Length: 232
Image 1 (cartoon, rainbow, N blue to C red):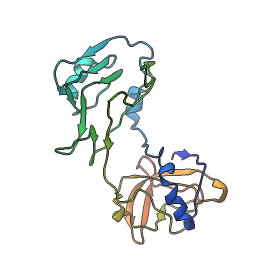
Image 2 (image 1 turned 60 degrees about the vertical axis):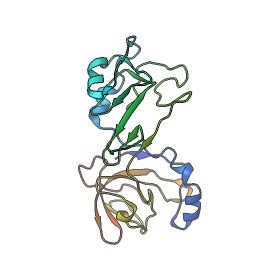
Image 3 (image 1 turned 180 degrees about the vertical axis):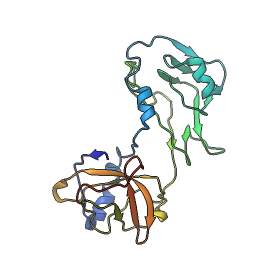
Image 4 (image 1 turned 120 degrees about the horizontal axis):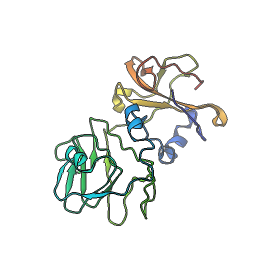
């Protein structure tokens, strides 16, 4: 279970205030726990030792780009060329003047459009520094564009219909999870509802849906029953 500190909390009667502050509340909330093998592969690798730069001369698949660049190269995609993601891509840094297409939808127009799959971008801490976006950056400058989209959801949040207390392994919501587009296997976070913003947020995986808008909880990794350790 991952514990997340918060600085503001709402009760069930505060729905209007919650909606009014929603854009601020969620601006940093869309993060997912990384697969363990991804962290092992990428974290703190080749710090300060990268000097080789390679640039492609034709459009290609990411599997071919991986062979071309390897893992310790600053890999450049010039204007006019496109790399289509069909595999993991592990490079020291990726410089895009052309296009990186990462989607699972026919005719998708976004650079990263994953409606039915999960995708992870790990920004390495290897000492490289861009003059504009600096270190460990995922960004665009000048006329560059980044578009990331995922599965559409009718609603990304709800309120508890009943108290969720220590030792429980399920929660009941005011809204029907299936109607909001939530699915078994999705990650959810329960924010504290105690006065004065006391308490911690807890994250879980949806195990199954039950009657009365009830969600059976699994732990963050989805490998065992999720047990609430606070009072909400």
